[in-house]
Image (cartoon, rainbow, N blue to C red; front, side, top):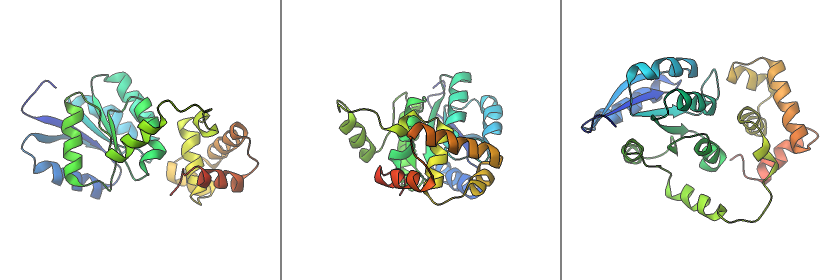
Length: 215
């Protein structure tokens, strides 16, 4: 941080209500201000530099691109920027992927406001932030002697497609949600089935449930 008195925060979330809620929470803090906001991944990449923030709150599910893709680009352009990922997904679904991609922290949107404020201050100070529950999950994985599960070999987009199919969404639904063509989503589905050696969406869904990738 360059300004010890004030933490400048940039919010990237496609839901206006969520952005307003976050701004209301942060407005009550004497040491935090919202320096900018965006509702798409492309706008976030374009605008974050102009706002000169110390911390970026980044939704992992943006309409035009996956939040982890945005994270990677932002970290490339602004390596000193702390990025705190926000998600509706269970922590163990995307947290490790986010941290490996350069996130300073990861938390669900169901977290209490005071936890959000604590997380912002922590990552702004150059530290990592994960919840106590996620910390236990990460600790349990240290030193485990086993082969990586098949879904670890998937790209971020393929993994996102897997979880959405397993949640009951059709290829058309996913294409509409991610602003992609049906053909592109079908290609993601085909690739992940090959990588995971599965035959169809039913087997994919069973795998996701068995490995607790969906709630």
